[in-house]
Length: 322
Image (cartoon, rainbow, N blue to C red; front, side, top):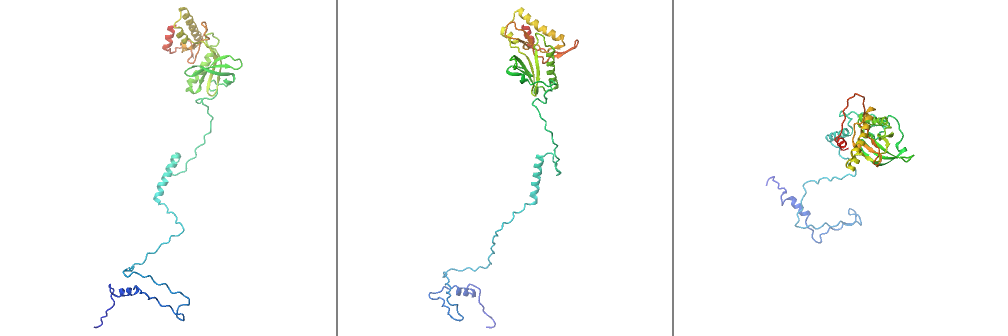
């Protein structure tokens, strides 16, 4: 036969199959391992024999694992630190923070320089009088109006001021108080008009047909003019109530009005707002005295000076009615 050696085959019926069959052959009944002898070379006395192997099924094929098992990773008890954000994410965050700082503090610039500290503004006590302080209109300090008079109901309303009923605390006599709010005196001309009105009323004081002034007071809110009270109402309302006047009565009223204008002009004053609403009766009697009021638009003038004045259509109509 020569040197030909027939070795075990690795095929299905070869060497490995024979070994597997021998190892996993199902044991028969009564094939238990013999007990180990007690003596030298044998097992230790009192040791129990190992348990018998389970009986595998004869028809089950055992798969042979050809790959090494994968290593098992055991998780550690210590927590790993969070991963750091990428550098490219930090730039947009820094830009957003810089934009927010610029929005809250406009003085900071984009170059990264520290914002300059704002100068401290001294606190100034302001009054609700459109920037006018106490004594800014009359240019002198006056008494407190409410210390001498108590204000009552409203009697009339004008463009700049409101007229109230006021009572003198010491005597109980009734007067009229015209209060001009300072917040309505927007320009220097408005302030000058109030000063001139008070000056003209003192200038014409004493005439029987011109309303007399008792005093001028000023606080942080308004300028107050205390005058005599004319409770008879306006000439305009009296004309509407009567419907018409007789020729003799109309002539008497016209003579009073023209006499007031003549006195004003002789004293260098031009009223410039003559109308029936600016003539008041002292009381409700038929023969009550007539008083001229409201010198807010009046001015001083000199002889020979040419001035233009406005006369409303209502004034012309009422004068024609009289």
